[in-house]
Image 1 (cartoon, rainbow, N blue to C red):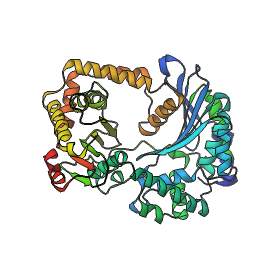
Image 2: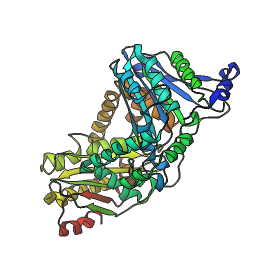
Image 3: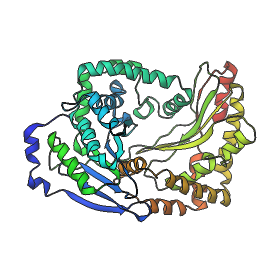
Image 4: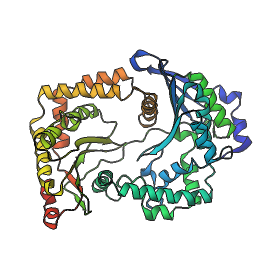
Amino acid sequence: MTSRGSKATARTSSEARAVARTQTLVKGMNGIGTVRKTTLPGGLRIVTETLPSVRSATFGIWAHVGSRDETPALGGATHYLEHLLFKGTSERSALDISSAIDAVGGEMNAFTAKEYTCYYARVLDTDLPLAIDVVCDMLTGSLIREEDVDVERGAILEEIAMTEDDPGDCVHDLFAHTMFGDSPLGRPVLGTVDTVNALTADRIRRFYKKHYDPTHLVVACAGNIDHDKVVRRVRAAFEKAGALGDTAAAPIAPRGGRRGLRAAGRVEHQGRRTEQAHIVLGMPGLARTDDRRWALGVLNTALGGGMSSRLFQEVREKRGLAYSVYSYTSGFADCGLFGVYAGCRPSQVHDVLRICRDELDKVAGNGLPDDEIARAIGQLQGSTVLGLEDTGALMNRIGKSELCWGEQISVDDMLARIAAVTPDEVRAVARDILGQRPSLSVIGPLKDKQAARLHDAVA
């Protein structure tokens, strides 16, 4: 986001200030504190959750851009840009950015996903003004210099190489390609060696200007904080950079639905000289806005969400065929994935696949008994709360909720929605999701006969 100069700053006058809108949305965890939202002129949204009992605060900025917004020629641009925003502004060098947060014992990082990017800093509550100033400066004043692009290219290529060295990670990228093909959702977030080498500073700057204006951003802050003070500090930082934009602009809406995913019986195998074979067997899931997602969460927990889950018991506990085996869901704006992962000896691949497929087919055809569903509901409620007991997790929840759903759900409401899931709803979503023909991705040193038999697992 480049400086827009004095004209943009002039627009943030007292008249513009008068149209800022603040709402109290929901109660915070355990009814303590509140989630509040202010929308500034220019469309910048600021969402906070107060938690007076802690001494830390996490401040983040979410951008409505991910790897699915890239053309094939821009593969990896979103992630490349994430790196470059740490490389310096007109106010701070790269060393200034990192040393400012290090000097107060804080932590600072960022992550890029398929549909969003987030930059954040976690600090003591007394150091929150510093975190706000540093992160806002990065987002509004990045220089994206040619020399920084060249230096960071090497670091990103090393990151790609590091990922390639971890087949347990790579198999999930392979599964995305198996399900989505050569589409934005099917391509890796990091890009490829060829696309990263082809990206130029000019192309990245244009991508930055297009996707990092205030209408595409959500500021999220959680911890021992004061909402009004956060708003004033963020406003001041954006005004200083001339980055509030057109005061009449409205925030961009959450991504809408486009088309459902239809993939069945696809198999991809990458032969590698690894000690284990890494497997993902799965099928289309649910979009993140689908009302059935609560029931799917319960189903996923019962199938592969813990040590008492069906897959863990059948594959690991009873037969010792894998150390790591689990199921998972991924929800996007218009589609989703349900997958089962296992890592095993290459000679055991077909045994593991047979057991996993048998369990999926059993649950699709017969459903789950009430006691397993009740246990999964309790496990999901507990893990939901335990996963939110730090300010970073709270910041992630409110920031992602605003960006992806345009609303906030209190923790108590989340627990109530999980508790309200009925056995019939779980059985229905099991029929709908698990009853589909699966697809399969495998990385490992399979012999030709073994590889040829992989299609049997998805027949």
